[in-house]
Length: 408
Image (cartoon, rainbow, N blue to C red; front, side, top):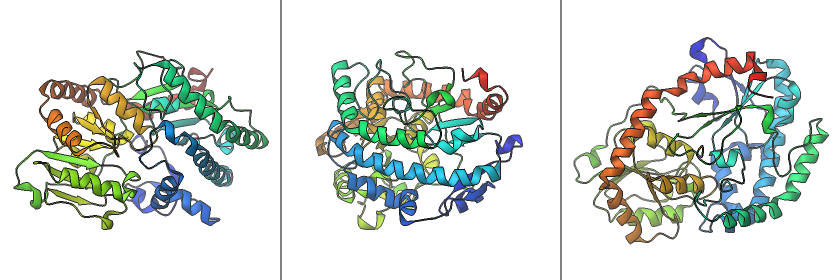
């Protein structure tokens, strides 16, 4: 948007302001009003909240459904905080379009009457629940037993229905229309943009409305960042593997130590994104790591990715044609991992229960799968040649000028 001459303002907390400023992006700082606000906006503290809920841990996806009640309370506080902030900021900013990356609806945005684009940083099963596909966060296969889908949805409903009713009452009390049952947003009111590679999508199972537009990736451009294989690894034998569990999952230090101990027995080399608790565990001799690494630079150098299955890592790894061992921990990671497995672009393993033999064997299997490597190379060429991301600005401009074209 900036490159096309538009003025772009980000509402951010003080953690993100200097990061965006480096890219020349204007920011409007969110006000701090109480300790809860700080907690929901801080990544490290958010990770501990999520772990305390039980979402980060060795339970299965269906066993974690009862914890969704705690997540709902957390998201309610966050949404109400953001709503208060935007009710204050929007009249002063007076934007032509609002772009949000949210789980739940913001009444201040709906009541403003300003066209809104909802950018999804989560997989499509969480974006739209559809009986033709597995439920989001379930990790169930699209080719699996629909009775298991129904069981998961029913358990989710039993846990969340009262939380939804309370949230819906608040939304209506703010002056908005009621929400669809068990849905925490009014999806028909927005242009939805999401990233999911064509090869992983569910277009063969369901179609979405014309207000849903898919892109293969939202790959970041990390300007002024370079990366070379560290000397401690450069002269050692073996393939080069990237191990990242994102920003939140590494907060479970005990499991990170367990996985590092297994990977220490591999003949290959590892670049590790260690996460916020990087000082609380030690890497093995065949590894190098840091709290965070420039992922885009690293992915272009490695032969294999071991990931939690977060949407950024999945889409960016496919951009570079890298096979993945997906070890989901919570949320839509389960869905992404299963989809990779089903479509033949990687293997899904249990992040907490996989054995040493399973993980080490999976590494060798993927490194030696030449047919998978060919398929991934083809996907990578298609995505990089298509360059669909360049069309985002034009799409948003068209939506602002012709909203009825996208919203009935």
